[in-house]
Amino acid sequence: DVKVTQSSRYLVKRTGEKVFLECVQDMDHENMFWYRQDPGLGLRLIYFSYDVKMKEKGDIPEGYSVSREKKERFSLILESASTNQTSMYLCASSPQAGGRTDTQYFGPGTRLTVL
Amino acid sequence: GENVEQHPSTLSVQEGDSAVIKCTYSDSASNYFPWYKQELGKRPQLIIDIRSNVGEKKDQRIAVTLNKTAKHFSLHITETQPEDSAVYFCAASTNDYKLSFGAGTTVTVRA
Image (tube, rainbow over all chains, first blue to last red; front, side):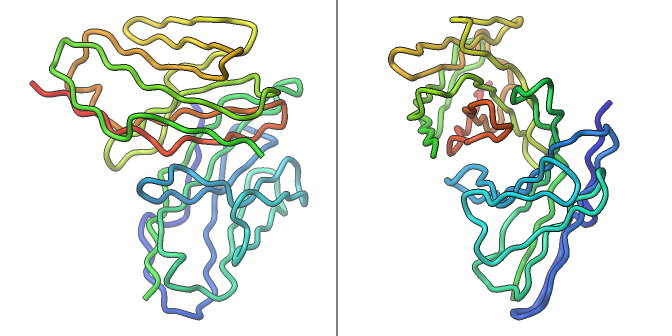
């Protein structure tokens, strides 16, 4: 059974703080993703990684950075948190499946509030 | 990039009736179309997917149809039950591992 875990379920931070969200998967998946989920907007891709130390910008990368030093771990960093980054953050992983897009497995999410 | 539109945004059905959610996509190169279900407070989970070499796929009470010419695909849930109440997301992808999601449909099944 695929397990994707995230470091926190709920997080409250102050404007200007540096925030780290961590994601770990135990299925040896090559691909990992960070999304934010806002009502009426669906899931929007922030960053994507297809290999260790590799990253690719998604649709809304501004204000975020990522780090992937190990295959199983993908971190999302908010360098200076702002109130408009208050959201639900979801991590996901997927196998590369012979070059085809395949099922993404999601973590439980982190509800971040920036005050 | 890919743009996926999903309708309706909310859907209320009587238990036992059918529910249909429709999505359109913009990139004709898209070839993978999954549907995710997210129950309240839970993570999204894949319920069914279809690839572009297939026109329809069924799994018990749920089915997905794909019309590549019109660039739209639909989720059909028959004999709805209270546990079908959730938010449903459609998505589309080319062979780049990434998914573009629709905005979601909140389905409520009335007892």
